[in-house]
Length: 152
Image (cartoon, rainbow, N blue to C red; front, side):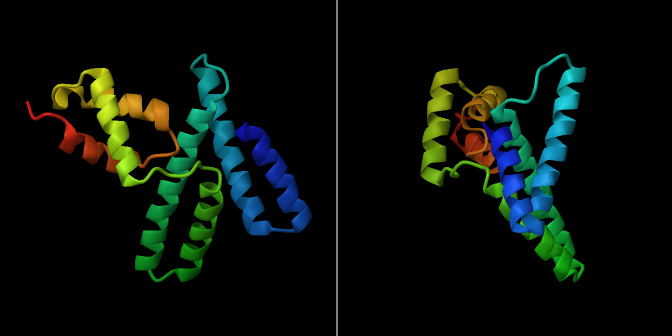
């Protein structure tokens, strides 16, 4: 389970004196704690591995946006710090699907949901999120779903 891996890796980073990795893992754990508190407030249990993977993807996306802003602002040292954090966070995600795998998954999801038009896009993307959390870039996948759905 991912939670145990975060704890074990945090101890390892402490022992090794790897401050950048330790800091990134602490950021993950803080975000996860917030997610769990939010879930408790909604009457749910702890975040599932799928929800944790979605959280990690969100954290990576935030860092990518920050990197762009820092680079545009001439703040190379801050961009480098964000890149290092994004790399650590990415190390917890499963191998990302390539474009052919994504297209095949979308075709299967369209068939499984019986999607017939753009009105069904939410069903298709929802199914993909449930099955492929952490393995697929859903921003890109949404664009492909739009292209692949029958126009109607």
